[in-house]
Length: 103
Image (cartoon, rainbow, N blue to C red):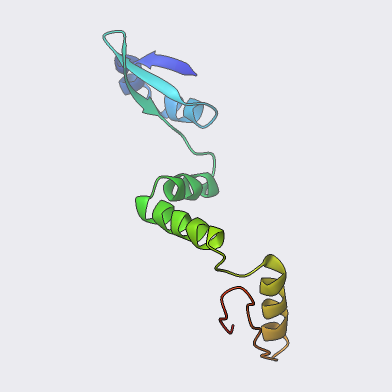
């Protein structure tokens, strides 16, 4: 991880943003870490960063994991079957054996 004094970053922000696309840049003030500059090489990286740092998204993921551990949800195979049947125009509901729900 690279570091740079705040005065240098202020003088040439564009340069440091390009560098931050490759690795985070620790910005120092009076020789001590004061912040981190993180760059994104693509929109996809920016989107992923936002998701991974969004408390609402993280709560939904944790709830989904709890549901799966509790035996709720469907297998990937069932999901594929549902997707295939809906794309073919047939709607054959499947019954989930563990929780009795009809999908």
